[in-house]
Length: 89
Image 1 (cartoon, helix red, strand yellow):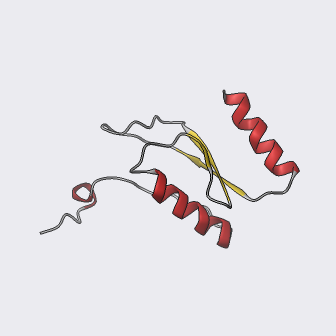
Image 2 (tube, helix red, strand yellow):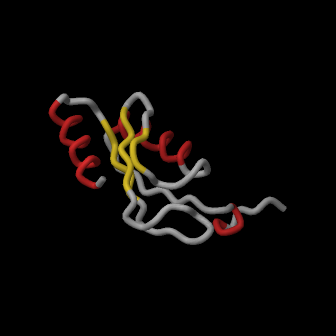
């Protein structure tokens, strides 16, 4: 399966289709994502791979679109608002 991922990356490079690679660098329960998990997000918003479930995917896709527009990498933190210190009062 890992070869499929890198084959897709190479194919996108060969055809010069813009894409982003998202990588999970830290995970805490209850997430389903695992450290090292990767996904490819293409300019049309298609995500191939796994970076977590329905909570993570929309944010990752949104940030991938921004990265494609400005060419800058992103480091995003996804967690409940109480862990960010921004819990509703």
